[in-house]
Image (cartoon, rainbow, N blue to C red):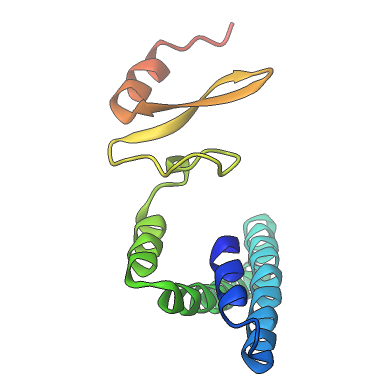
Length: 139
């Protein structure tokens, strides 16, 4: 999203009205990401079912709002960006490395932590993960 925002901001740099709208959407997007994460956490931690459903409903509203901004940015970039966004949304969380520097894992693969100090992840086939977990010991 950051690179899409930068590209759109550069494209509309001489159109003050559009540039201001893009910046407002970007700030809203960043805020909505944080708010949705907080609401999701609160919904999982609430003991009261009424509060839990209220937080869950708020999380869904915030998620819908930030996804609308993502859709809008992608549509303004290209059809390829729209397709990329669709693929990202359909992917598992472990299809992405922790720092966001590597490409999305292809189907049947995921990023797996192989070292904690220093932290390092490697792209591995999913089938190997199940066999590794079966052999792990916690002594």
